[in-house]
Image 1 (cartoon, rainbow, N blue to C red):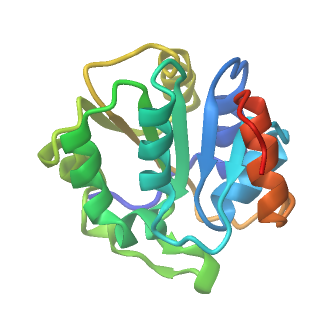
Image 2: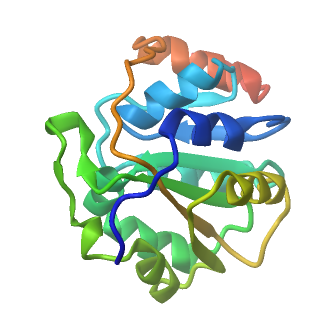
Length: 195
């Protein structure tokens, strides 16, 4: 494994979400939520609060419920390490419309920037072993742009992007923490009844 990446986290997320069209986005706890919100609040964003380790499986459920819509989960390396079993479940389910983007700075950002295990554990290899159709590390804005263009295209199965970001910690950009509001807004965006 190599050290942390050099991509600016906010720039990488904003580029990944540019021209998002029908993309549904689930965010992991903490920094991924702040970064997606900073890139522009959207009715198709489902922000998770207090659900550490759950973003990937929420994304799986959404991808299965909305097979005609591309689903992107943006989460952090610490959260994905907490939910490693989710990669196996997603690999077996093989949704063709689900992409996981893991922001990997090799630190646990929400608890004090301690070193995470991704310096020793390669999430790309873990996803490949779990049966993901595609898994790769992303280290440049050109690779982010290429990944963005592929998000709306169905694939043979789930995809994983490990985005190698720098160890910066930009200011928080906080969306609503009202879970009922977030849920109802998201359901309305999907054309589903609220409540």
